[in-house]
Image (cartoon, rainbow, N blue to C red):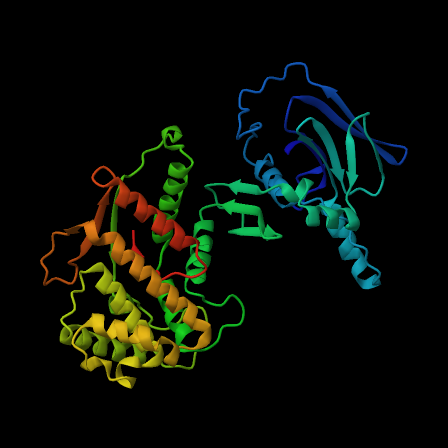
Length: 432
């Protein structure tokens, strides 16, 4: 559906009052109020020519004006106004506020949908339109029908893309599981990143249980930044371009080399300035617990002579450390006596249902599956190291996967990241 025209009764900041806005010169559209009814006039435009229309875009409209002319106000209005029906309020003390809200919501909007022209409004007065134009007056029944059938307004996703800070929405809204509004702004990637990583580690959206699982995951997620999330998005977009065979149509540059690494949980926690959950208050002494565990894990790595630069060993160690942080498994099962990290990992896999709470078993079972898939994928991959000596804390080895050198492994790894990112849960220690 293409928005052709809207009539705004009133904007919240007072810039618009009974304002008409024509967004396409395909038609000449105007509205007048006469004899307690609205008359909509629509005639064909004489000089209409659309250079933008293709299989993806129907039309493009530009808003041009000086500072303060109302460009941002108009875009916000279009984005936020869903032509809501007037709320019926019987309580006398609320009627003034309801009436004031309705004055801001009151609108008439005209859309083109295929070969149809549709007028949708929430006005109380009669609306008269030319022959052949469909009219929908938004009331509670019609609103419910659109919601259930995902039709008309409920088939639209509004996307607000801006590099400014003039909109205070940072995220998205959904109707019936489908996105209805999305803001892509300077601040929104923080919101998306926060939601994505919380989803990965099963961090609760509502009431947060004060337990070691939630505390640890909250600390880990707090170390993830926008660039980590952007790297995941870049891979997902590349995967979409490749699978839809649209690579040749992409105008930008695409990196055909992936560098994959992972950090140990102790190194992640050491870098935290405040070693406790950031999203909620806890009576648990996290700083002391983190300090003691980091010392114990350091001894474990040394005693087992673990190669922390091996990506799969690193992931398995993080699996061990998470479970030890929450359930104290190394001491409980005397696993520190085993000779290798691999043997400890296999033992913890075997005992998982014995010590792990039911609500977290699925998360750790999926982590085991991810590690197994990763282990198979990187068998033929090259390792590259940075220029620091091995004795330096900044020394790091990464997996390098090149499309030019091994396109099959590269594409398999892209698919692995795509599938992992879209799961309900994911072990989030990979750095891309």
